[in-house]
Amino acid sequence: MDVRAPFEHTPANCRAREILDRIGDKWSLHVISQLSDRTKRFTELRRDIDGISQRMLTVTLRGLERDGIISRTMYPVMPPHVEYALTPLGNTLLDTASTFISWAEKHVDEIETTRALYDARVQRFHEPG
Image (cartoon, rainbow, N blue to C red; front, top):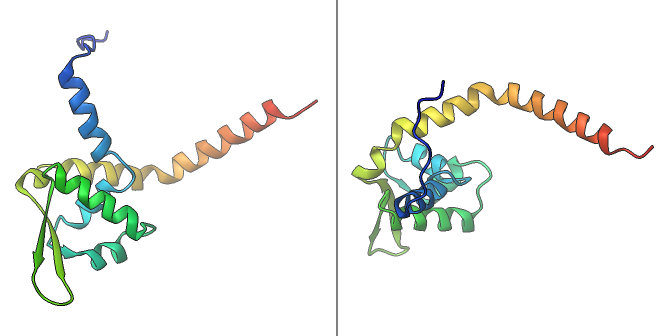
């Protein structure tokens, strides 16, 4: 028996969904994870997050900064020195982010197998004749 209360659509749900969209996007959890142990520069983050482009890292960092999850500190030197760190609010996400990443790493083989089976089944269904 499901004892959860029915989902009620409220303005707070919509705002929470916007935040979940940010945190659950393709790169945010990776950035949060990379900043878990120390402050890093942009180039370190780009090097340490496999597959992220410079533009996507910039967009992700700006969004996380706007939401108060990371902080950006710029030092007035040439060339400019910019560092990123988790804020106290961002630190509250570490356990959750680590859980999601660990879950994905633990189940990647199983998911890839089921995807292949699904794709083969769907392909057979759509084949002519």
